[in-house]
Length: 155
Image (tube, rainbow, N blue to C red; front, side):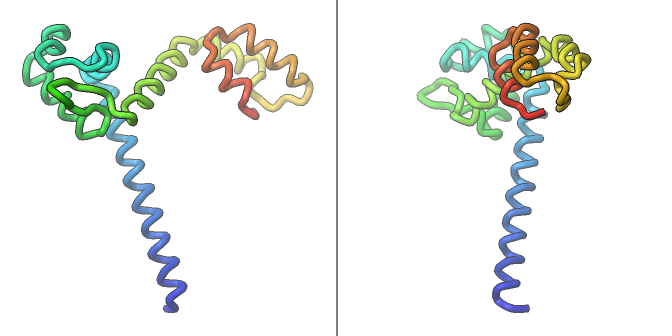
């Protein structure tokens, strides 16, 4: 095997390893965010702008074990950090928080999205001018973030 082929094989291995790690991280974050108590802790840390464990635990009415095991998982996932006696979201955690909010808004608007689908607006229908399509989507969808996603998408 030539040096060039060996380097290419090593590069492929590196890319595959990175993809695998990213997939595992994403799966771990999704699993963590599917636990309602973890989400409550995560959201409370964001909304409180940091807080001591005693205060958070008392507010959330969780046992020590429930609180610390979930907080530990949030830290291991890179979503939360402990600093000066309080918990704060990491930059990764901030992005995940906003993605979670968008996901919740999307679920809340499920029927509006189904209506857009039923009108055929999500398909690349050449019979309807893009401007008209965008106007209908804009009138149906109230959430600005979702509206921007739909209007910028090339269905």
